[in-house]
Length: 438
Ligand code: ASP
Image 1 (cartoon, rainbow, N blue to C red):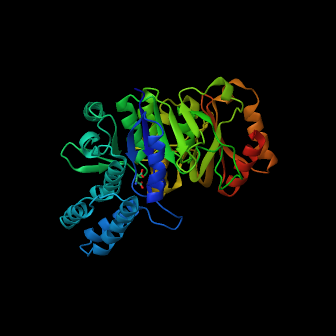
Image 2: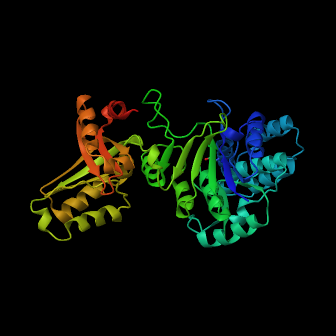
């Protein structure tokens, strides 16, 4: 039997009306056996996600204050869904147990995981599927990373015993039984892990958009949809801010080549974006798959005559950054220059120490920090077999009157990274998009 793992995000499960759409999607294809659910998300743009309500509730409890009001608001969200769906799910014993844990000083991870836990119980009852508690099958290491060995031992063994099931996203437990969560949006990661463990043919990630777009619609008007994208391209785009899927969700699917299909719960007939190892040749019409970026970077520029002959110079520079816990984004370098690009917010707390260590230990001719840099990634496998793509990118930016402050192209030719001033960011993205729009 074919196995499809589906994951439904918070907006797809925010109300009874959305639950009905989800049930229709699942019932329309019996390969959709395993369902991973998020907590109820926003019903309207000014609504509050249940996960955020739980975090507030946990904070109030941690301050030793009365959290009855916060918990009552959370109860209302679930009760309104259950009542409208006409299911008998009794939330009160669950809430009593959460309240007891809150009073006993429960961890924030435990409290914020309860949105997924309760919503999945509701969905399981509505669908008539068994409920599998993620705490029993998704196992974390002490340091909060996934314990692959234990998870891929426990989870497949349980899935094998079920024809179908609902599994909460976002959380699991450590070996001592304490609840641990992924970072925000982590139900996507759970979905990918379940797809891997079930050896699924496909992982469908259902959300409120019909897949990925070539550029951020807040910057570019009506950007074209991306029908196909490779795991590697997606990784580059999501790292640079395109946020359709959690950054870590690609890996579990990618290791065994499970395609990920981003779909829209509100427009189930749209085919969405298909993420695979290799994009089908017929789909490679445009050399650029997508453009993404973010603001707020800085560049530490080190100039030193004869740097190229000094063995270990770069290693020494990098060691200083590593000692200060700084993660480096890019490192374009020349013969006598090296620039290290990193997030400005990371540098600020250690800026003085960084500069004094570089100065004292390396005595460079000049040492400067340039701030206000935005990075733009122009991503596409198509760039590697088509000459002139880089030239088109640069001329589009130049024609828009934007100065390029930094350039970096990886040897895989999967992307070109361009640094521009923060105030030119939107203009540069629009110019590149216009140049390559289909
Ligand atoms: N509910 C969690 C969040 O809001 C996890 C998720 O939805 O994926 O981040």
